[in-house]
Image (cartoon, rainbow, N blue to C red; front, side, top):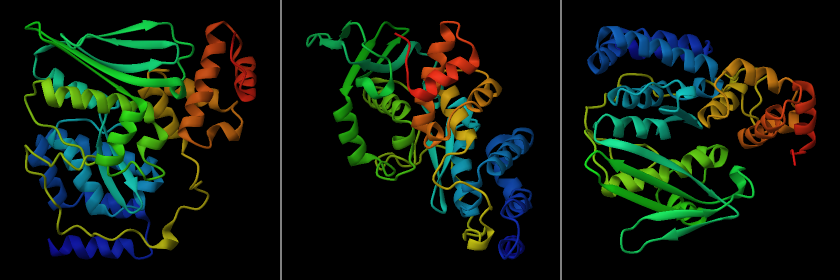
Length: 333
């Protein structure tokens, strides 16, 4: 595999970062590893998806090829797709290192594979609501009406499952308890561009569901998540791609015109679809053509803008009028 190292290093010196990744992904050694994990047919499809993901996200192009491949291999070992819009698994860049993050839907998918669950759910509790807890059965009950369903108005999150044998379990955590847990166990919590900062709602749902299932649930396979210190990789052996270049592109390879502080539209669209606020990415993109730039500064800002926009559209306001209200931050009464 020495040729692979030389080829990758050559591509990394003054070359195109995407071309470098394409060369590595098509190398015999990498093709072989993904075929071992997924078989020839699905291995090729998975590598094609990975290359498309790298092409769409310039920040991934600045990561070390080895870290990207290891993160992708972990998703492949769990048979989870890596398209962000599916919410199953994510390959997230932190500086020049890529990290595998298990998505909320990915966790649901792993639980569903056992064939033992009738119901699996996790969601927020909002201001205006309260939680009643039966200390004998462990059941929780949500009472009251939410004053708002905006993510920033959540006061806590619950998770619930019911199995086919009739077994039920509940878990409720306040927002403060979730943050304290993340501060202690999440490797990415304090990183400014982590999902904890850009999509707290999904991460909070995933946290309560993961804790509930890890204590009371039943799985056919053990899942793992690079964001959690206490969950080491288990199951299929993950290739480490030791002969793949472990250096990021040179500084002069940064893509001109990229907005480093603002998320690209792909991340915004994926977040909105993952939150089930929309199912058509093209309509989401068209809506944001009418959004003021300030509302696209962060994923959270963009999601809040789209919630407001969607609320006006729900009462039959025209697209331009709904966008104008959302740009002013005015919500329907």
